[in-house]
Length: 89
Ligand code: HEM
Image (cartoon, rainbow, N blue to C red):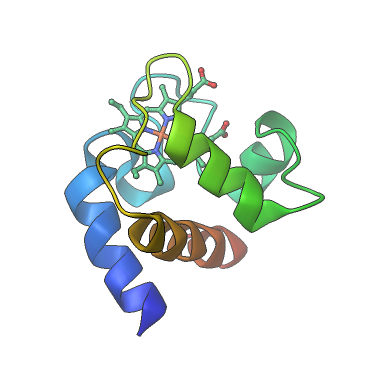
């Protein structure tokens, strides 16, 4: 149920830039496991926390979502991204 809701949140808020786990603005910074491990700080230590931090605060051209999504929504979409990365989208 959590990742189902996460998928809906992803489609509504993230897929414009990250459809299918891609990155339309910075093409090598995808949401695939290898890219997350390489580019997202602390991903290998605390993957869910690392994704949550990026969603809350944004980075570069990616907007922050902490005033747009609730913490519960951020947690659900982070869990969705992690699960999709683990299964190569
Ligand atoms: C990077 C998730 C929305 C643009 C990332 C990364 C994650 C992420 C986990 C790190 C990927 C990596 O470094 O390989 C999300 C989620 C979103 C979202 C879950 C929705 C809640 C967006 C939107 C845009 C965007 C709407 C475009 C307007 C980017 C860009 C980067 C990025 C440009 C690279 C940032 C940098 O390192 O300079 N995103 N994103 N993201 N995202 Fe998003």
